[in-house]
Image (cartoon, rainbow, N blue to C red; front, side):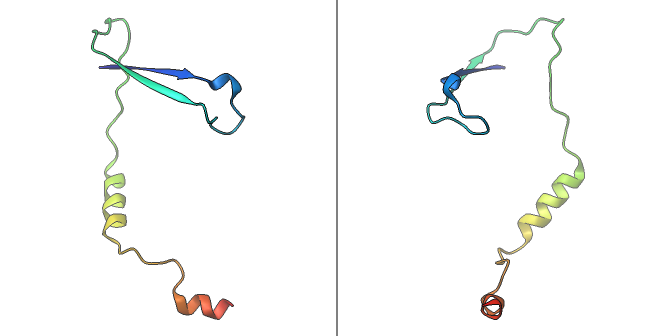
Length: 74
C-alpha cells in the first residue's frame, strides 16, 4: 500500500510551528510499485525497546514530587 501526503496551506506557515490552516490528506493507492523502485520497509525495533516499554508501562503512575516534598520547598 502506498501513501501519498498532500499538504495545503503551508505557504503562509510560521517558521518552527504548524500553521492553523494546515491540512493533510492521506491518499491510499494499492497500485503495484515497479521493481526498480526500492520499497522502504522499517526495520524491526530492537528488543531493548520492548524491554524499556514493558518496564515503563509496569511502573505505577507516581508523581514526580510528593505533597510532603512540595511543602518542604515552600
